Image 1: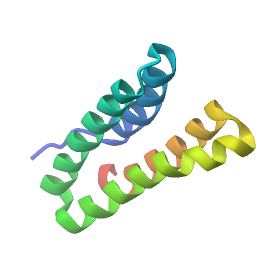
Image 2: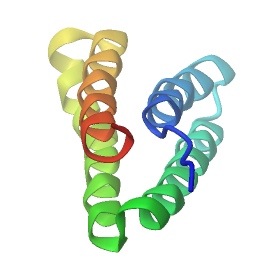
Image 3: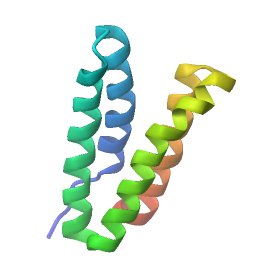
Image 4: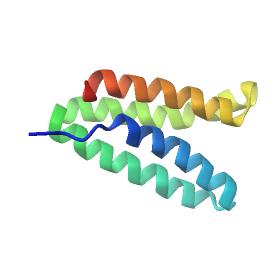
Length: 98
């Protein structure tokens, strides 16, 4: 069974969700982007890695979203989003996509 890489989807969900919320002015719309990418990725992780790994990666994804907020107060919004995205996408690649 071939699997679709999920690290790019994770990155698109975090960056795209932030950009959508910021530039549309509609924060829930950003949440839709974030949620859609997270739901799709979790389904793929569950199919390829099992529910335990899927749950752990989902916690990391959501943790990155939550962690970017206090980090943004220290380094700025875009640097924060890009930093947490790089970390989570890297972990996702190492755990699920490699």
